[in-house]
Length: 414
Image (cartoon, rainbow, N blue to C red; front, side, top):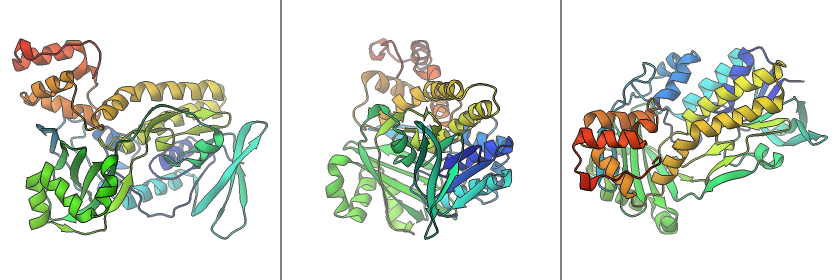
């Protein structure tokens, strides 16, 4: 009998297992994969996500694997261009985009060192129920006999297509349909900055460095163009770069070298799922997913996993009832993520910006200070109200000398 079972041992599951094991609980984490292994990913960890790794004592271990440091970003949206970087977040002034073969194995090892039992290559066949409550899992390692494990809480950290969510009946809400499909590959010979540009025809391109002198270079095409795009992925991929970012497109042709096959990353819809019920909980993409465009997924998995671990500790220790603790996790997760969710679903539609957003971004690009503040929003060190509240927008327009006839002041957030 375990105190907790975690299904999925990547960036959401292993940190949760580690936190609970460090608190003295008997934890089992299972994953169908073996580690190290790859998975589709943005790779990107924002500064506030790196702050969590440092707090857990794992950042130096990650830096020891020598991921490339990112300290400059170039952001473009339909002709609006901004370049800069965020102020340090909790003293961290860089971002990193580690290979998942490195990051996930590091997190699995950390969970094991903390005392969690991790079974790799384990496929969960289903949840075990008793009187309407989840009480465990059953599954097997490859060709071995079916096994059953029990615990008072089973957590699904098993991604967008979560088996735990499906069998527990977790309902989705605030669903926003996905708009694109991502293709990425690893290149050598490109510069080390973060590039992020939206074009005029439901397209986006981005690049950021990772391990081993390689750069993750990606494009997104709208779903309406997907069939056309996949008829000639290399040619259409290069065409997106040439259209949106011709300088980097030329660099990819003239001095870059593609070092991998293209990886397709069809986007799941944006959604929240009910993240708990009798005997079960969800974390990471199983619980909450948004378009990969801003790269918040890994960072949110770290933050929400830490919140869930604290509430499970309260419940497992008898400090408060499970329902009370998990309802608070649900409330905190939704409150903390709502503004980023709205911001992400707005920008990832790749449509025309609202007059308000175009006015705000247009004013921001006039000011290095406000540009730094905007990049701080992505990094996790600046709140949305510091940029998008009516008071902040009025201050932005005044400080940048924006003419009154170009100021848009509707109430509300972006």
